[in-house]
Image (cartoon, rainbow, N blue to C red; front, side, top):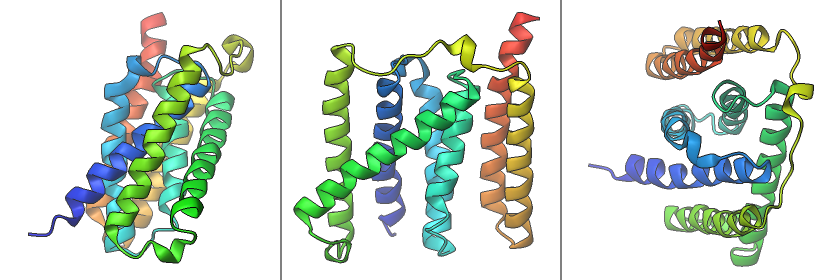
Length: 207
């Protein structure tokens, strides 16, 4: 039995949770309120990421998919305005990548020097540790960005969000289906149903 999938899922989950924590802390949102929903989405994303990277050789697609999923997650579950979820995800991802690049350069000097999985796992854990430490400190000190959310939210945003999520899952699922990648298509379907539930729940509560 190979432990590679277990290692990938475990360390990728730590890394992606750190990215979630960075974004939520940077924009002064209560990260604990949505931790279980975030963990559910992160586990599904890491599973499809493993398939894309290791089974299909599409590692270049995985970061883009993660960015799109986080945008939808923050808009649907955390209820950020769509424009803020885009800004928060992209800026958070850039900061996270910058921190990881600095660690990589300081410790390994080059990507080519990460010549085994242990080094890769070290990079993921080190990045997560720094993110949790630095942004936890800044959050406790009241640092971060805040916005008037109502002013950033436009009238048809919930409809647009639902349409975007549906379009995303249809396009991705069709591509995966015609390439006979049914498991990955199923993962995207489950994730999208989850996000659509949260994107429509607020409207039902207000009705």
